[in-house]
Length: 263
Ligand code: SAM
Image 1 (spheres, rainbow, N blue to C red):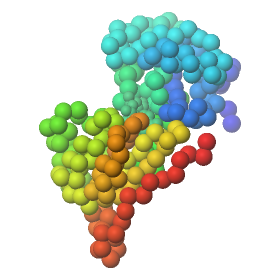
Image 2 (image 1 turned 90 degrees about the vertical axis):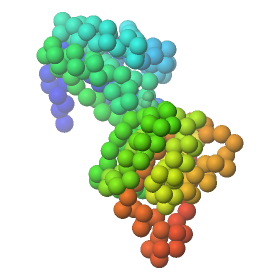
Image 3 (image 1 turned 45 degrees about the vertical axis):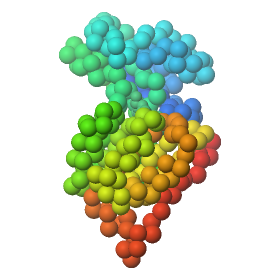
Image 4 (image 1 turned 60 degrees about the vertical axis):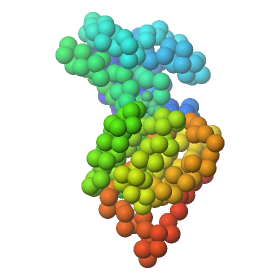
């Protein structure tokens, strides 16, 4: 099958384009063939952390000029990158892991590109939110992604409380030192029987998924001396309360840790 970039540019990344390139969350095998080709063909790669992306590129034997584009310089960089693309350069934007713009920098770059009529092309791949939802065991046909839960207690509680009557699954990113508090708030505000899932260290050595009623997941987590790694919290819809109690209403559902990844 012919691809659009190849059609437009004889097999090399098209000039005057900004590519949004997803990179692995942990397991380097998750990089796509297209991501590797585009990263190898563009004239410039904008990334959050040049050292981190440098290591990724080195692993794949790709050598390209890198410029930083992170939360603190994105406004300035956006104009610069869009203007360079408008002048004919092909540029890839990556984040530290996963899909750029998904709780990561890049929105301003895309806006600046669109404003200047520069073509923006997605090179899709991993994202922790979608990976977590897919393994959560919670309804996935209708979901909301809310980025990071607010770090302050009152705002976090308000965000969780707002899901009381939600008919969708809701996906949050959460820091390891706050995950237990977030699950405790879920128990208190939405009830201990609300079904949730916690996906930790996806695609990495210590990958784990805890699923079940919030109270059971809280119990499993709170037994640990500390919470380590990267976490996604998925809170199921209110209608799952009945399912969480089990068909016989006995409340026998338990938190089920999943196995580690196969590679
Ligand atoms: N752009 C990324 C994406 O597409 O998933 C997300 C970047 S955001 C700054 C980082 C957060 O994503 C982490 O704090 C964690 O909540 C989640 N995350 C990233 N990698 C993860 C992993 N391997 N397992 C679980 N959660 C992960």
